[in-house]
Image 1 (spheres, one colour):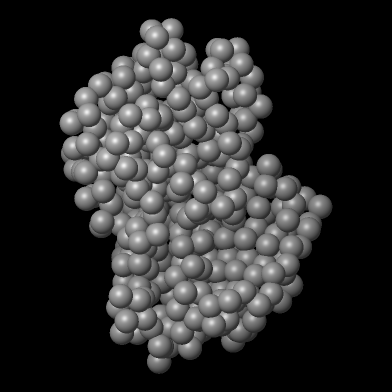
Image 2 (cartoon, one colour):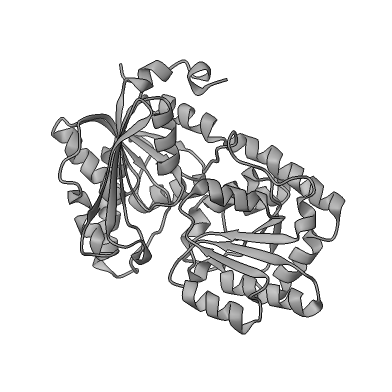
Length: 391
């Protein structure tokens, strides 16, 4: 069944126009919403600003109509994040008039609020992809400015979307929100289940673990490498794929060499085509998420996209008890929670590859749990609940 056949409001949405403004180029809710709306044939303009220094100085602007891209350009600003954030509201200088504006951070939402005031946007939605109480440090004036703008967006937007209940409650407490503001939804991270390849029933035999994410200390990739070195010293052959880039990438490549893991660990860097990411996941045996257990990490209020990507591929997951849904995943999705410790992670990998039957059951649990997080269901429902079908 096509999306048009399944969704009775498709024709209304297809006649509407949308702006999606976000930071970052990796797959997330903004990219999923783009794909959904473009698939319905709506008029869509997207603006993706760089989020991290390694993403450079290019701001990508695209327009779509009737399911096809009609314009795509890259605007270079000679600033890298975080300095480039100040320029984001001016890039590009003018966007078309739209029925609905989705801002995926407070600054992007504030620009939408300005567009609404000028009659260039009918409705504005703040779609928050994380919650960090002290984003630039507890005493930084930038943190105060960011939080003030975040509160304004929460109050003035026509709709508000959070990735998790933990993030919604934390943001409500911080900003003194009482629930009498705009319509607020929790829309978790999803995956395109209809297109995502899944690990085969014999994927256990590959003895391949995979990490997907930003290469920064809080993601725990260095600790994962130490765990792989322990397994190698034991004579347990396990290969690993690390997908992603970040400031830690040079250090991690050096660490692979220092640990003698060049023949078993592949660092792919940033993979722009998410279909290729999905292919690598489906060729693996276990998904790893060894988050560093810091009190300040925003992962405690997040719904990490890597976990949904692992589940959609049918991968059993090994993770630390950091994301708010970690224990739910352990209870319902075949995941295993471990201490943030190389030996504990090594033991969990070895145990996860010790039994074909147990691995197969965890794979089945992951696929069953993933059915509740299909973007093809989550996004139409969110649009309807936000009242964004044009009247």
